Image 1 (cartoon, one colour):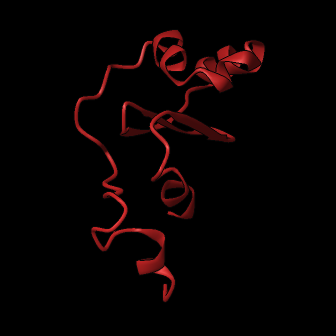
Image 2 (image 1 turned 180 degrees about the vertical axis):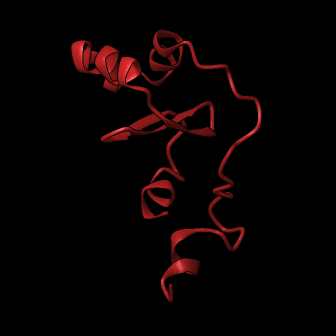
Length: 86
């Protein structure tokens, strides 16, 4: 969950760890377990790592309107300072 909390102040981002992909576009976070074919697409197009919207299009992922992980906003009690005791 620390990766997701690190994305809180960022509007758009992408983090890939092996077959796990976390993409945030327009404040909406989506997590995806990549297939072998999707991993190959990202392996052959490393420039996509800096373009979260294009990752979604390149992998044929649906555009998400609602977050799959709620990060909250700074100051609402869900920021990283609130999780310091975890």
